[in-house]
Amino acid sequence: MEDHFLDCRGLRCPMPIVRISLAMKTAAVGEKLRVQATDPAFRADIEAWVRRTGHRLLEYKEGTPQQAVIEKV
Amino acid sequence: MVDAAEMSHTTEAEALEQLIDRRLAARFAALESRISELIRGQDEARGTNAPGMAMIVCSGDVDKLLAAFTLAVSAAAAGLKVNMFFAFWAVLALRRRTVFKGKNLLQRIMTGLLPSGPKALSTSQMNCLGAGPRLLGLAMRRRGVPCLQDLMGTAAELKVRMVVCETSMELMGFTRTEMIDGLEYGGATSFLDSALEARLTLFI
Image 1 (cartoon, rainbow over the protein chains, first blue to last red):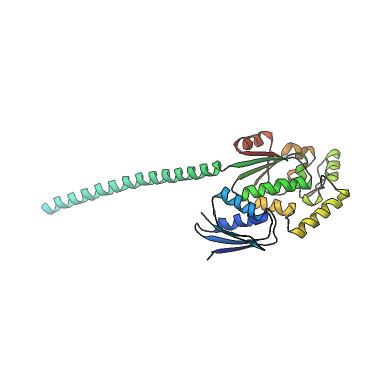
Image 2 (tube, rainbow over the protein chains, first blue to last red):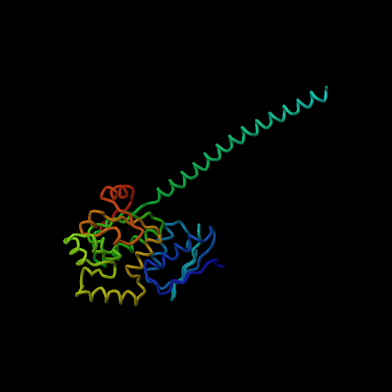
């Protein structure tokens, strides 16, 4: 079960990533964040973002909306 | 007699103990402050070692400013230290209000002619006397793309450093009182300083 939930549906680049980064700042290490998004660039962006920041992308599901679960490292 | 001797012995021992305690406490306090100093230094080093991005933003076109701020915000969200240096027409985006008081004729003309703030800027193409930016804004709102004003707010929220070229600002006849809050003012050397430390440098 995730500790935080973020609804980024309807938001476009770069706002989903901005919201995620702000949410991760307030989360504790080991906590998980579930994100829903509809931005077509979301997959590429979230993958690059976790590579950059070192957080872990535990789950990614295509669809409407796209679903991602990120763990704070 | 014996009692008195014993007593003086005890007080002596106590005094010695107290002296040792005091000295140890002083020593520990010094060590503790040194440790916290080192930890602070380490944290600072970690902060300054974060990869940086330095941008010269020169254009006052809304489309180019959108690109600049989208990149700045994305970089800041990924933990990069972002430094934006606003030169020439880009200064117009950071203008908040128009002040004529205390300016000479040339400065007043410039102040009156030049746009103020992100909403008054034109697009580099398809401007059509201001219809272009309106259409673009409408299309962006429909698709949930953040407008320049939102991006500028987000950049400030993410602690993107925004430095205004003081010479450009003065050339256009503006004063600091006409600019938005949270800006720094500097010259080319201050940009070079941040650019040399950055891993990524862009000119927009």
